[in-house]
Image (cartoon, rainbow, N blue to C red):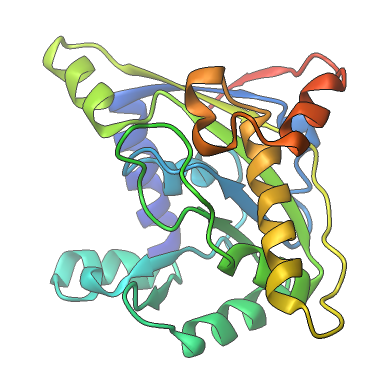
Length: 231
């Protein structure tokens, strides 16, 4: 009951402040365990998953600061989120995340680890690729545009809903980690995830991956025209 009520509040707030257009949702394996990897522009990014699925095993990783406010703590607990220490290696949170993924949950993650100040992609961290490689779950790349806090607030000032676009790519899996060069392999995996996200974004959002060779390969491919879903 608490989960459904919290999800209802999220959907109400998002509908009030934004119109969400989702392209390519047919690519999403939302009946299986998967990591949804997206760029991070604003505070609404993490909750986009609740707009497109009724699954109750969606699990987010949230900063420990949200445990200090009573209402936010109730909200986070109702959504079965995992608290994570943003400033130190939180092995406990990583173990819990792996366990949840192995149990079959859906987990939205931002490989960049923080919101981009410019709106364009910054370098991805290794955590998302580590979880994907260790658990073997699907990775679903998503490119978000228009969810920047400044854009959302500016639209509200003009009594308009912001237009947020989510482009969903094709899900893929990363091979298990093997050998001694784990850090190098994880970096390659991270670059793959970030380039998959970059390929779903307009040029001005591609940031540090704009000239990456893997991105150029992905852009050279001709994907099918995605289907629009208003969330």
